[in-house]
Image 1 (cartoon, rainbow, N blue to C red):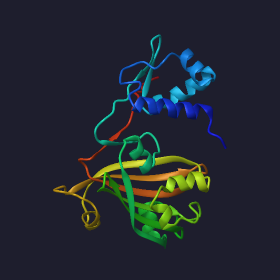
Image 2 (tube, one colour):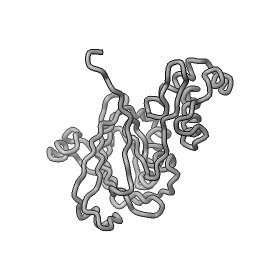
Image 3 (cartoon, rainbow, N blue to C red):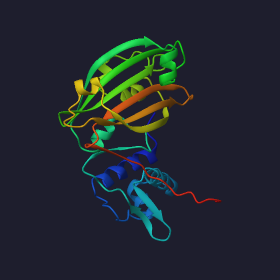
Length: 243
């Protein structure tokens, strides 16, 4: 199925903002100008702008226009308001990336596994450990569990690339929602084995449970990051009491 027009416009504007063609605090071209440029309706432009606003790239100002509020940062930033693969995050931050699979196995969820990760007892799972290299440095350890009933025919070769590309482009899975928790945790033996830790004795850990369009949790991931090299950004909106 071809991509919706608004999605193509959103991605083009996002790319231009990240490249600073539209720099921080500047105004996007007028709505009329964008309609002419992209050959589309006002509603299509407004939908693309709405997605950019929800991701913290722009802010609509009544009577003024749409202001760019995205500001590039030196550290690799992983956004918390969207579901973004490792490859997509690295590409957005212009980083050279590689992935090494250090463990790929299948297991069946027992009561302990079910309680810890959230999969039903008896679920057939893929269990994967991957070391993520950014600019040739091992800085992230990902521990992934995928539900075999949903993520069919997963292989170590696929896991060494982009699993999300495989899920969306090959098997047509609709990835909808992810619940995340961020903690700071002491390093473990496996962290010391695979990551370049320098003098750090703790890691920033992002734990996520991800659901498909049927509300089925098909993925549990724990992503363990060296704290000096990564930041996580989100965009929050003030909701006034009583409104």
